[in-house]
Amino acid sequence: MNSSNQNKGMNNNPMSSIHTNNNNYTMNTNTNNNNNFNNNNNNNQSRPNYNNGMQMNNSMNRTNDQMLHESAFTNVAIMPINALSPNCSSWRIRAKIDSKAPIREWTKGDRTFINFFVILCDKDGHKIEGTFWSDAVQKFHGILEEGKVYEFSGGQIKPVNRQWAKTDHTFALSFDMNTTITEVQEEIETRLNLKTIDDLTEANGTVDMLLKVISHTPTQDINTRIGPKRIKKIQAADITQKSIEIALWAEFADMMDEKTQ
Image (cartoon, rainbow, N blue to C red; front, top):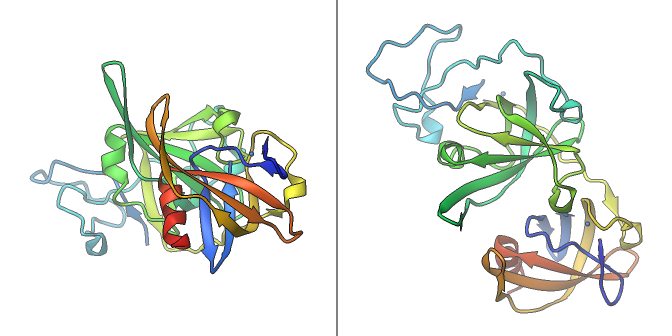
């Protein structure tokens, strides 16, 4: 965590999740019938007869080329998120989408990049970040919903950069077109390990806090090394009445603008 003038400040990582309850903000910040979402473009060809057959998910307005099919990882046992590591040759997790970020696109040199990330939480409260890249962005972003539970398999497990970590996990997931995602009709409760401002001892990391907004600045645009970004600063207090300054970036600044108008 970085220090503010009054107490310790929050890392200004643009990816923080906010859950609101009137003026209280629970912040996670940076200091089951299975529906399988894999596109199938061969609509005019005969389809294999899977164990449970093929079915269309009308509730999600799926087109003919978005048919459901059984995952190749069905026989892989579900494992807890905290057991994931690059040593896992094949893996499958069941997790709730705790938060889903908007699509982000940027240019570096003559290349254009596109991605979005999700924070996944399993039934034991363990969390991990998953990032979708390139074609997988268009394939999954419009389908995945915050608060719903899915089974995930077929992604890469990579070491996380602690400077930009969005969870306490040592690793993060990278999803591509080979990823298989299946909706599960199950509920997973979000578990929060609430801390106070005095508990903030690390410069980098994640923490759950219950804060009340005391004051805030107008949202403004500033230039960063990756282009213009919106930023909003708020002053908030915890249950001990100590206060902290928090920088909210991009969509999180917009979210707070809506809540503080």
